[in-house]
Length: 469
Image (cartoon, rainbow, N blue to C red; front, side, top):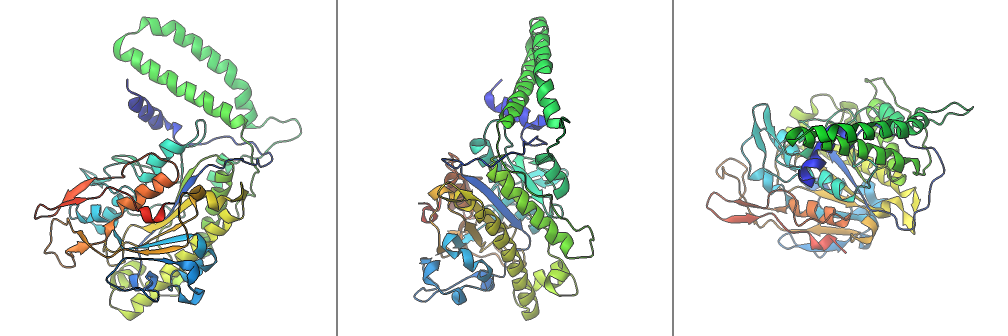
């Protein structure tokens, strides 16, 4: 049985995620902080003219790389302005495209974008609907940089995933996110119990040795009586139990401070229902990363509410779908981008408030803000992305990077309305760059090549060297 098959078996049995006990003791200083990955995933893309920038001295027809620190805050675009306090630790990438989505089958663009945004991989046509054809890059990263005995990754969603979700453990294996901040908090940070009363964590630790010893003796008696497939199954089960044992032992030595209980508003008719859940997951994310409970977190944000934007009507149908030409829709969806930029700012503030090594937790993270679409009008070109944090020095920061559209479009329906002959650089290259920045040894993420209807090869491999140190 190969290592890969064993690993997938263990993940399928829940060892890649789940509830863990976490001691509540003092925060440990780390001499060499690990690098982490965080993905903030939002809906409906961007109004391109409200996020793009054309600083003095740049031209529309050429690539450029501009230092954000050279720009006054007032020169930042409308959507980027809320991020001004962190402009020296941002990389704004303008000129990517979801080339893999362009080259895939005709399908609902929201769902297709959700399958491609973090995988960059051609979908699988399944009777229940098209599903992602590979693991999302956060899971690729988690398997390489995760620490044995800890959680590979955490998947959160403020009010549930939309369009089928963006996180995939493997091809055809979506990972449902956790949208209950109270439940996530209680599982990850159980309260300490005083007065001589044993916590559940203590009870498990005390009982594990005798239970595992008994299981080991049962293995020794049973294994010689089996052969072939049954012996393989028993061996895999042994791996499962052993991995669980190692996890509990590792967590006994984990040192961190327990954060405050999340304050969550339960009135769905109040915008605080959404905002309090976001803030709770931000706090949980910062605590889990600072404790080194995990090194990969995804946070999916569902569609903003009308009261976020001060509107009446349907955000999706009335505004996002008309945000190319209708001035009122453009203004509303520009505000939509500003609200999410404020969400990102709050996440960065939380990460930057945790001292770590010679800097802060933010300095050792790569934070990606992206969407399932380039625009609310269902385009995949041009796909803006914002990266924050330094990934332990692996990322150049404080840059606005712009790439002109010169990638041949592999769309199989070149005569459809809105299909452009040339599009941005493959977004796979950004995913590969971020995976490398946080320590994953990968040559590429997702589909490696596509072809235009005329047979021209379109490579999707490589990295964005411009953002790597």
